[in-house]
Length: 333
Image 1 (cartoon, rainbow, N blue to C red):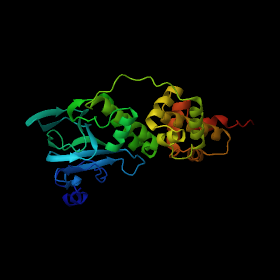
Image 2: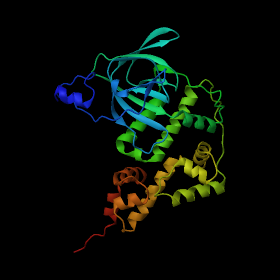
Image 3: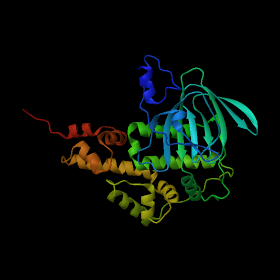
Image 4: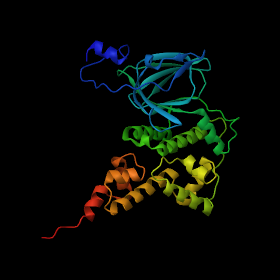
């Protein structure tokens, strides 16, 4: 690629191009930095977004994968709770804590956590490679507060604490699961993002909040009439855009409380239960011989045939195609 062609891509200032380097698609910036004076900092002046969940059905979390050069930002903040996980080579961070500068080597898997509306300074040094490869997750503070209320926490006394460096296997697992959802197409499933963003919010509240959560409470199970109503609602709405909040509303409960009791009652999260209900309904449709695989996928609310196939194989140990081949009668001559 020529220098002029790279200039058109918008990142000429930071990323020198060498022969053989694969140029990835550029996405808009949606996780914005703000100066403390209220001025928006242009995202494309700092990094290149190479993967994004924007345009999916996820409401409470935004995922972006960035390629960042060496940079320095001061007196800036996010307006959402932002997690940044290093998924590339080691880089060096320099930041200011209690008036003193500190240096942190961020190996692969290390992360920073920036609570909303908390100003910070950051200097990133990229030495071994062209750019740092960082996965960003941004959670809506209102959503996190709602999760805290579901956990029966006093939201007026809860404050999330900034974290620089170190690793958190649970947080990394959730971040990579969300990225895999974008890459595989599961991001089109609203419940997938809802389940993982809720788990992420609960983890932040448990590990990075000023008030520690108490011991786990035994919540019991759903009353039988509510469980029956929830299952009926799910079965009636399999082809619709099901959400935990929608199911919980149908039985007159808060989403978080419903999720806990539903799992105690069924042994599965609402998301897993819905997916398996869709798979079993698809199998019933396919065994009638009246539907193709793609038609069955559509009828039960899967994004496409591959989405159904992936979950079908996990539940039944074979693909829909193999199921159909088994049911075809042999021709005897």
